[in-house]
Image (cartoon, rainbow, N blue to C red):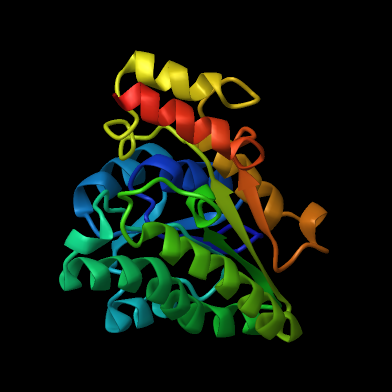
Length: 252
């Protein structure tokens, strides 16, 4: 067992979550990778050598059972999320519940289950995954941006409430990161090149960009950082106007 204890990562089956699980293994944590689907977890388990469990973060009973799987937890990464590309007037009630239950209620349930265990272990770190869409977003993205804005506020609340227990809490807000889940949304190679071209760093993000940031925020070097949302976006939030104009042109 790792001397650093256990890091629990939700939504770890692919994309950003998988990259986070991988770097935390490298950092010396014993990782428990959670996802709602068994298929992706099998590959993660085989390639990274981590423990896995199928858990729906919106299911309070399933989340409660995670405490028995991670008695030595020191890190919780709330990465699981649902994104819908649909305008608000046509978003169904079931879709609303799905987005908010997973993206907002899920991180709270996970914290309720694991933060007391962290405190008993001497403290720890909670990382919530936000998004640049919490600051500015295009039409037709449904409730996802609102759910991520809620995460920014929850992160501050968690930071204040958990600090006396020795637990820090920060959020990481990815920008235009190319993953298995976002590949279709960002179009073909020419569309992606157009999007990258209006970002100051002139490239789209990779899951490893986000994972590296999570790794830092979990480290001792970040021990005086809590309650912050760090946007890792290649300059998106500094140039959002030009980004959206270009994105609209690229999709026409």
